[in-house]
Image (cartoon, rainbow, N blue to C red):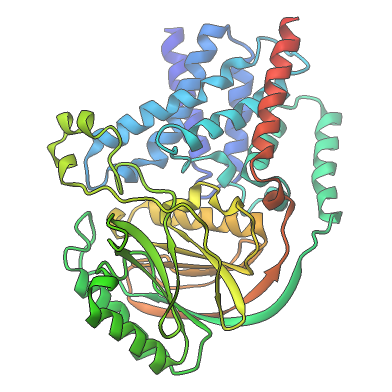
Length: 461
């Protein structure tokens, strides 16, 4: 009976924590849930703590990631959640009783859990990290300093502190971060047009007629953008699922459009130019100026890991052609300014931390595969986090929505309605320099892990 109560309560507080993720975005919910989780963990023995930690994770993942099974059935969604819930087991490392180091162990173990979720297996799936929940909270100012890992550590620490004096010190320290200035410099404003062409049907076969999707983006650009009115036009991922390098007609039409509108065009497409299938972004002005090849591919979406094993359970896996990943970042330059693009799944992999030298960021995505689910809002919420971490404005463009302009504080400047074809035009403030989070890259995660190991060794000695 006790075990069932623990499981039920753990699932409940995990579900409460999931309310912090978009589209609900109740930022206080994860902190309340972590408060309750810590309280119950330090009252139970190790065996029970393992159970509590696992089902807490499952309580977050099952509702947050339900959209992953919307077109392929419940089995993949449930299997993914059951597997990833194992990554929350390190939360059981706190010890029974009110120990001095327990709060630090709790906070660093949650960072470790989310790091595991981000990198394991097959490049990980860190979509539902609690560190993504504080964009609209008073703790949003921490993102430019310590990134997602730092925010995760902070909310877990605050939730587990039981001494008022310590809590006050932590909160004052957070407020003090606003006194630290980065070496950031605002320069020009550029005018950008985002084209949300739409698709004729949602689901896995959204692009069964790639010419139709391409034509929709082409038509929207011609109808709604005036010549020499914008500095850059951006089409989303999969807007041109026709190999431009093998289709001279499409190549000529894009070049002609760039000439007609007198501006550069960045589009998302595919190619086999290297001999392997690749997901790419191409910059025209009016001819091809530069290309970026997506580096972080979606497992089971753009390639099949353990193909021989997987095919035994799903013959459909043999129909998937693996994409080939790129190896280098690309800094695009046009009309006197620079930008980098993240293609869909790359958004969750902290890929921006190469060496941030560009003046704005672009996110090109295709949400048509997931229909009208929470995935759309969750992905854009992660983009808002990236804007805060980098202090860069972001042009976020999708085939179906939610196409948006995001300022450097993570706020939505303007957006298009979901599923409605259209063009969104706004100005983007160019910014130079790096935030502390961008400079430190993965060091907050590493530091948190070292702290966890140190505290555990110290506890045993």
